[in-house]
Image (cartoon, rainbow, N blue to C red):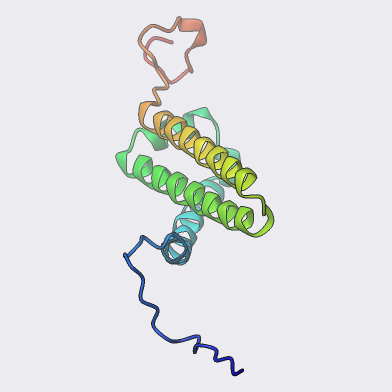
Length: 148
């Protein structure tokens, strides 16, 4: 009785084409990693090196940064790319170490839920940040606000 083993590079005919999450996850990790390097080093340069260095980081510094749409977009890109990059990495770790199908699914659903909540909250903070809210009392406003 002879056993033949198919070549690992042989084309397999699938009855229907499926979205390959592993392939696109792998591509995303490489592409987002390259973009994240630029975003992270730009973030670190502006916050820690330019100006007075780390001493300049306070509430007024963040308020000044978030007054510019450029920095809002920069930080939201950093947030989204880094959080999805990390979540995709955790999905890969889950696939490797959580072998029970039910537990694997539960962990992945929890991972997606946590990612979505953090993305929504982080994006809201970045785009709705107002250092001088209209209804605040003068004692609670920073010194640079007109009503303070």
